[in-house]
Image (cartoon, rainbow, N blue to C red; front, side, top):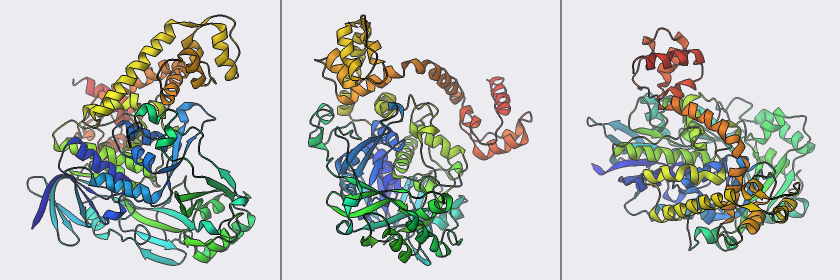
Amino acid sequence: MIIAEFDVVVVGGGHAGIEATHAAWKIGVKTAMLTMDLNAIGRMSCNPAVGGVAKGQIVRDIDALGGLMGLLTDKAGIQFRMLNMSKGPAVWGPRAQCDMKYYSEVARETMESLQGLTLIQGELASFERMNDGRLELTLLNGDRYITRALVITSGTFLASKMFTGLETSIGGRVGEPSADKLSECLAKNGIRLRRLKTGTPSRLDPDSIDFNECDVQHGDDKPWPMSDRHFDGATPDKFWGDQVNKFIRNDCVCWITRTNIKTHDILRSGFKDSPMFSGRIHGKGPRYCPSIEDKINRFGDRDGHQLFLEPEQADIGRVYINGFSSSLPADIQLAAIHTIPGLTRAKVLQIGYAVEYDSVDATQLYPTFECKHVPGIYFAGQVCGTSGYEEAAGQGLMAGINAALKVKGEEPFILGRSESYLGVMVDDLVNILLDEPYRMFTSRAEYRLFLRSDNAEMRLKEKARKIGMISDRDWFDWDRRRNFMADLKTKFAETSATPEEANVILEAGGQALASERTRWINVLRRPGIDPETFFKVAAPDAQITRRDQWYMYAEELYAGFFDRQEREIDDQKKMEKVKLSPDFDYMSITAISIESRQRLNAHKPLTLGQASRVPGVRPADITVLAHWIESRT
């Protein structure tokens, strides 16, 4: 018996599932979320934080596109910091410690508040394509549903196993089961799977920690929220003004300590029982978030590794040891922890463990996240071979948007590498055959001067508005701010500062002083000035938020570099506009090398730009392909 029919069903209630569900619902199609445990919606499996360098830029992209992660983070955040501030604003990364329990509660409440959304508790066992192209879903308990599009955001739960030393158990997260039947169903449908590995550290009782032996790490004096939108009565002006601390919590601290030689010796003594070194774990783990035993093995000459002690909740509750992920035997982990300053009497509430799971080879997917050879099936999140909440959420947003647009018969929504960090990530995932979990870095973005955390709205808001992701209220606030900043920039370009006025700003920033009148816009472009001081002097009556002050400063700071990057972007956009059919047989173009033809046939790129980024395809062959296309248009 068919229980219900939907346009889009999202499998999974993690960060990818939340964004996919919300996006499909927002665009206006009949949507359901199917998850094994409704109480686990938005659960943070590992670290109690959102954002960071490059990851924070992804969250800001998600927010500008109408997604939820930034808003949820601001509600559940307990400490806010802007990372990388010693460098230019192009690589600043907003980050927030979160109350893990409250984050999950807010996420579930948000899902429950979406009128018309259906939440289903259950496990997807299999799917079959019907004669009309729709998909029939069968749950483990026998319940059946029909959907026009299926978005799978199964995280680390496909055929998952957990490891601590010689002990092995079934599950994708402690206390939660593995989705074995779905993994079998995917393989039967010809979807290539590979094994990957992740891990998590021990959690400690805060009452057993001597924090006096650790360095304290506070949040920023003036916190930078993740979202630009309203909540709890805070308008953007209030939220980014002097009242910011009334609307977000920023009073929790973290602590810093280090491992030492004794710690490393104890860890090495357990290597013989390590599931990673003994070959019991076959999946490859994240290169840039290695376990502590992997660090010791790879960097054995170091006398210590920095660790961050992070509260999991506002009332602390448990402390997460950031940097100490491990799957070594429990007694080895405990003995090693007891050699670390501040942790010599630490009580472990949950021991660290590793998870090995099935993931999908993302080169089987279009940039919409739809499977190339199984139409109507989309994948997003860690199941696509990424690490991190932010990467997962970004994929979920894009997959949910595109699943909904396809159901409505509308054009797909694809962002380019020059438009957002999401565009960079998606392009990397679908074009590069990965053998380890993918993590976003600013270095992956060729056009990072354009892809800053401060200008996400300017880059993406209008695009999101066109597909129905932005509310009238949010659009009105943004449009008003955008026009106001444009008028202010014109004023700065047309009026001049006296040497006395300019020098107040320059002296505060430690810059060479002015001896003659200069246009305000040139003062704003000086590296190292404080934008807040600038606006107090240059526009004392302007009602402009701190966020927008820094945006205007960054735009002028990098103005001299934009022309060259814009030319590069224009060249890339021309290649992206040349569409390629996914059904085209490249073997018919004999002027292209056999290797390139085989790789292009396997990847099925949708544009000439994507074809140029397929690994192993020669630049000369792209030139031949471009000429071949031009001769036939």
